Amino acid sequence: MTPSPLVRHLPGLVATLAFVGLIALGARVDMAVPGSPVPQSLQTLAVLAAGLALGPRRGLAAGLLYLAAGAVGLPVFAGGGSGLSALTGPTAGYLAGFVLAAGLVGGLSGDLMDRPWGRQIVTALGLALAGHAIILALGWSGLALRLGPGGALSAGVWPFLWGMAVKSVIVAVAAPVLLCLRQRLNI
Image 1 (spheres, rainbow, N blue to C red):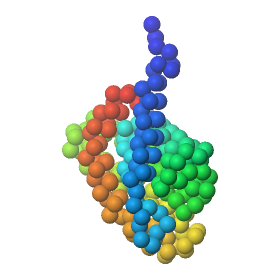
Image 2 (tube, rainbow, N blue to C red):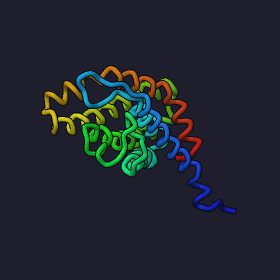
Image 3 (cartoon, rainbow, N blue to C red):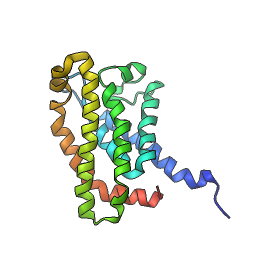
Image 4 (cartoon, rainbow, N blue to C red):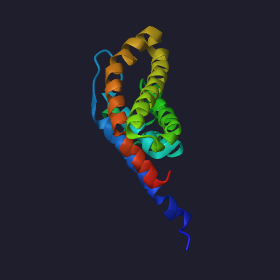
């Protein structure tokens, strides 16, 4: 007997919702950055991990569901923020970058499962850095509308480079486990 579509897709759905929760938890681990309206948080680590573990469609879906949860008023954004004002405020570009980065990392990591773990880690590091570059670029563009290009670099890019480098290394080291999850979910 063939399982129903719901039963077949249930593990992927549960994993997607779990990563939405991890992104929200990452928002709770935040710290103010002097001179910046944007806090440093662990959200990007969870976003990129979602891309690796869930693949492009579900990684993108996790990012969109996270934004939807915040838009309807759940306090899932950094600092406990929520609502449409958070999606149009100083962090708007970064939040949009979450969705694109998760989809990109998920899409470009599909063939990593067949590589030795050392290559998985090295390639995942490159993908994580690229994902962070997307998040920073979109974050910069949103802040540039408010602070000008130079102000956006000073307040929204330079202070985050060290944290994003560290988070990229963490995602890369976790890549073999995340890719194993992806394979087990058959995504």
